[in-house]
Structure formats: C-alpha cells, structure tokens
Length: 60
Image 1 (cartoon, rainbow, N blue to C red):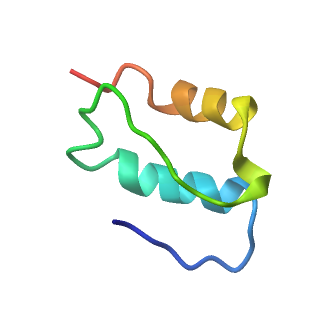
Image 2: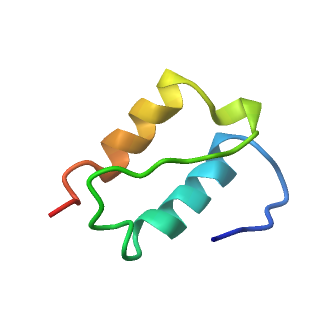
C-alpha cells in the first residue's frame, strides 16, 4: 500500500502517486494493475488512457 500527502487534489497529484507506485516492483513489471480510489477528478477513460500511455510497455 502506498500513499502521499499533496497540497492540492487533481490529476497532477494523482499522477505523482501513479508514478511512485508504477516505477517499483512488482507493479513496474505487472501486466495489469488495478487502482481503487474515490477521487472524482481522476476517474474514467481519460485518466485510464493517460496512465496506460505513461506506463505502457513496462511489463515484461
């Protein structure tokens, strides 16, 4: 489990958390990662596409 404290909310702070998690094993090498979160500013297809594009091809 990972967490962060940020001064603001939104996609920027959320992507900071995504980067923190996705650059460490076992997530960096995972074929699929599921996120459970209640933040409305970073849910939906747009955020999923953004995260996929940022970390695509990292799985081995």
